[in-house]
Length: 229
Image (cartoon, rainbow, N blue to C red; front, top):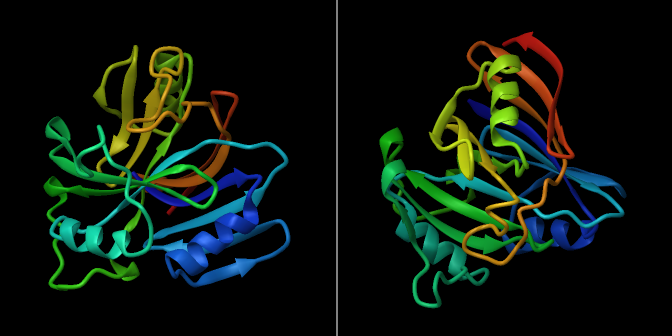
């Protein structure tokens, strides 16, 4: 699966724009009083103004040999979240992946992840924005993982990956994942105290040879469109 486009909602649009444009240094491809859009690798991400505050967890994929360079680059711009007050790298043994975490301009939890199984090393020595490959994960907290996963499998043909259907599961592939915490059990996004609320988003996802337009709202999956790539 590939996350080709995603729209997230925020009541701190100005702060979020400053974060992406000034703190991280992205070029903004489109901006208005209601939203702004930027291209991150093969993912187009839009932040849309809302009255209500929403909490998201999303993740960026970087080359598997660039973690240390990315830490150096990122730490010169913001504070990387410390895990258990002593380390910044989280190892996921069953995923063969390492992650670092930080807060975006609206207080959401964002992440850089390296997935060693993808073997996507780069010859570059220094890290820069061009090496952020895509939005790799988006959180979809729900009270019923089994129901949401079944909807994804039935309507998007996206398969369960790892975890379980009771407390925390994942759906998709290592190129793109839906994170499915049960927010009655997993109440906070690791490694923070941010609530795993079912915040709405809209996205276009490439799965197999099709593009699927989907909305996630109130813990439910709604498919709008499907077309051949």
